[in-house]
Image (cartoon, rainbow, N blue to C red; front, side, top):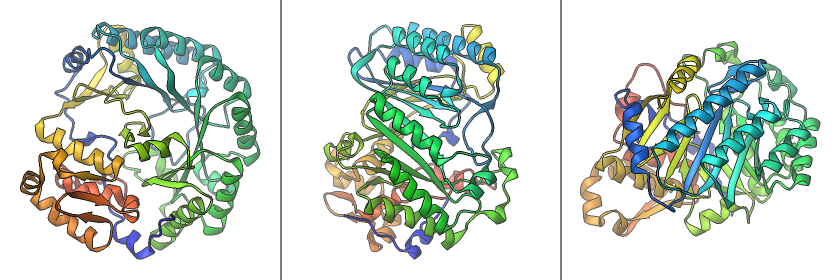
Amino acid sequence: MSIKASNELLLKYDRPGPRYISYPIAPVWSDDFGAEEHAESLRRANHAGEPLSLYVHLPFCKSMCWYCGCNVFITQNEGKMASYVDRVLEEAALARLYMDQDRPVIQHHWGGGTPTHLPSDEMVRLFSGLGELFPTTDDAEISIEIDPRVTTVSQLETLRACGFNRISMGVQDFDSRVQKAIHRIQSFEETRELTEAAKALGFISLNVDLVYGLPHQTIAGFDRTLEQILDLKPDRVACYCYAHVPWIKKHQKVIDVDDLPQGKDKMALYLLALDGLQDAGFIAIGMDHFARPGDSLHKAVSTGELHRNFMGYTTHPAQDMISFGVTSISEISGAFAQNLKDLSAWHTAVEAGQLPVDRGLRRNGDDERRRKIILDLMCRFGLQFEQHGGAEAFFDLYREPLKDLQGMVDDGLVVVSINGIEVTELGRLFLRNICMPLDAYLKKQLSKSQPIFSKTV
């Protein structure tokens, strides 16, 4: 069934808010949480046999895309990249010292930056070294983000030989005027060549990323891009809202705000993608993710196994995620730990044998309860009060948030009964809004003079 949302409803709920890849959200973490606290989390993580997710941040890119909100460094220096691989392996070995028990890695992901900007021999060295420290299961999801502009078929062969089985490919928009404005020239032909090669090599899943709200985007141009995306026959599509935050990402100042679609024009782009993907048979998973029926992401929704962490929606419900590399974030034993953001400082810490932690947070009891609520809403699209202490306790603890949800009840986004909360099919498009009233930290964060969140649509 296709989900239909009016322009008016999208505009009403187009508010600044977190994406809830964590709770509590990263802006409330503290620099009082450092290497010693993370080491203690790793010691607590010795639960033999429990699944583990692993993430590696590879920050290097060949050139800067003006719209980018990721933590990246522009370089052509292969020696610098080889040195980075050295430090990642050293950091992983250091973390492994604190974990006495073997835990099966069921999800292993490389993000960036552009992971395939690394030379092939360095990719092999990194993957092999990590595998010795943190072996993956036979059925593990092993995925990587690639940029078709710098990735070769030979690199795909190398990745497949290593064991990678899933690919996420950035496209954003194929319109030439949009590409010029965001400094990312990428032809449909080179993208198609790489997707066909990936399928021939046996990669079992292909995800394509789109972005709406970019400079000079039009209905006609984005419609052509959607047609081309469907021609690639991906298994999943993510359609993200561009976040224009030049006070955080200085390079975005290159983009003229007058060239950005606003209000109804921006909403129209999203509705076009929503309708087009659903008409093509994709299932709206939640917010900005779409999957073909039968894809593991769709199956995870059906079985209640869908999970959400710093990699977004995942099909493997590992509660702990260990991450390596500059700026990367681990979630271990009820605590978050983010690595240093400065590349030189990160190198120095690892070389000194220190866990390179910049800040973090250990969740308290209230955090854990709210985190479970938000995960249920984001991943299972509802909750049963009996699984959260019972209806009476829930209504007593969250009286004010439930009042705030009433407007969404009236708009048909959620149903609140004596048994629980149910997110409707329409409400799945507004999951961030539905979760926001239950966020104990959000009002204080939104009161800050400088915005820190993108809008929710």
